[in-house]
Image (cartoon, rainbow over all chains, first blue to last red; front, top):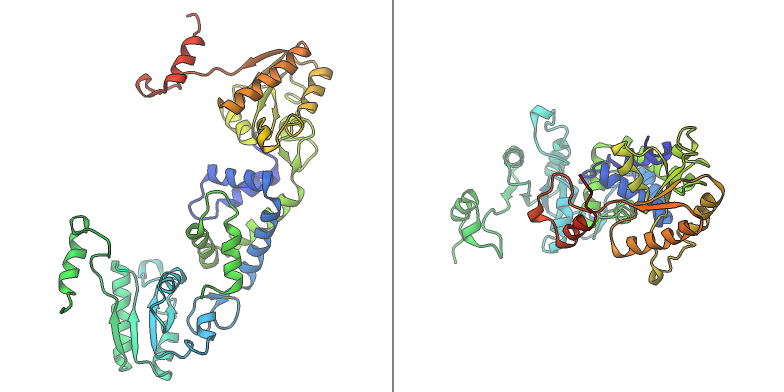
Length: 199
Length: 199
């Protein structure tokens, strides 16, 4: 015998969250029921509204409930001549946290993965080509992940950019700042040599 | 600049879940938005209903949306003459997983903690006394946690039980099955000696 149906249902449904197993789901359900009902109600409400209303930005494909995301809608950055291509909205946040990039983004929402049925269409590359063809783009910075799939995606997009005569670059791969050479893997170390800069 | 207001609100609200920091909340929000909107809607619905409807069992104080929880409502166990006192509903589940205990439970929903304003009233000890006075109880098993607060709570309840002439016992503390003596802490080892059983 387990809990009452409604409590059981809540625990089961909490397991749809990534990284939440049966024990964590139980702990979350009890924590909300015990001491934080108001927060639970607010969460339910935010969740219901977000699931119903949040779509993709018409310009960069990140998540937003408006037609354009805050960056694409801003007068300063929405028409910037540099586009940074990333895999996920979380990558946008990571780059924004640095504050050094002032252009706009294009969010693929994934990477090329033919076995999973993810091709150029699923990544919205037609929309990216529209930007390259219509807007005045001086540079396309490819910031997909340094994985096999991310690299393949970057090369595919680089070909498109070249067809439109747009400068294309890839973010640098090398030793992370604060890291110690001794503990850096050999592939990264090799890339830090091929990508060396004149001083 | 962060995300759109609705996405931001969802991430903020997910942080009310225990063990969920800013990065996990972001990951959860994106996972639901990206690939699991149906599960998100179901979760929002289960959450809203649970927060509104789930109360406490009138007999044992565990969480339930009915007047009585499934155990207290069952013909076989609802009137059992043994009551096991535990701190949380999760403890009930842990004991039920073993399947060896066939009595009923009483859930304190916490332990005595005067500094936090948790006294006998907050733990529903008046309700427990009603059970001891009215029902025919042959034994009260105290299964509060083996912590300072849990032990204090057990002693306090034991005094009540003795006033009602009810047999009272505490679950055994000792070396866990499958554990190695070498790695067991000294207090537990001492308890395993004082609680030794004739063979």
